[in-house]
Length: 376
Image (cartoon, rainbow, N blue to C red):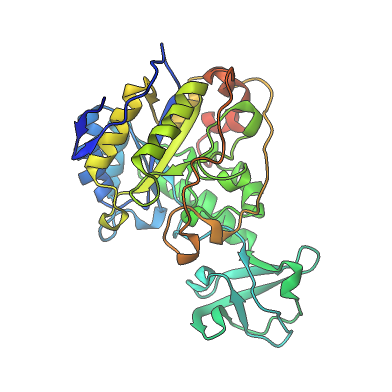
């Protein structure tokens, strides 16, 4: 049996689940004004549930982005404000696609996102040898996309050795720490982050826990997207989410994802964008909210999902099954990142522990982050 919502049909559960059956977090990236005018006003507020807006710190109050006053209003209304880095940089490792000679002043790469801001320092490495170069711009030719450099590389690298380039530590730390500091200067509390482009490289994974309780879309660090969170596959800060716009997730797949959350009494995270190109109108968001309510899933912010539990105990383990490179990101902004959601990657076995497992997971580095504000 279904119920019409916003032109869609709700997919009802085939079996009833007694009591609370897990928690669901909605996250929205990039901080466009539509987070306020559409997603909040026309979806979440009407359904009486919160969401999370992930905001690049330098975009606040500029153009068609959320203002500082709107951030505070959202927080006052029960929303969580998350970081989305400082300048919306891709904070992961990008594959170098061609051999590099010492005199080269171009790096041919899978995607040239790291050439967007001239002057950014980049680390080129094959895992055993590395050098630091400076981006001067970006472009493409018949050989592919490239990052232009201010000077020659100075070393040789063979692409077959798995060469990558990433931002140097000073850029990563500014993107993580300074973004939080600047957002909190607007009068909101920030404890979690969504990585731009889903880019979550090895060095970023090492640094993220110094600044945040959780990375909402760190799924590639724990075995893929659309994971639900249980102790055996989770260690903070690495969490996973599923993108739920049209074209990324069908209504049937959304229902299956919610069933997995409910059946395991687990935590699930959905992600999307409020801007019009995303194909995630308020009606579709309300459909997802009502589908979750029909399964008796609590809709909360990520901070609330973590903080309402004890912050002591032992950690779970993190499953690492794939490289967290930028080209595998989940926000759909780069051509190389437009992949399917993968909602069937992990199934839920019967008899899994209830949602109280977060008491164990939050304790690892998360307890301090929940109590701490950046710079205090």
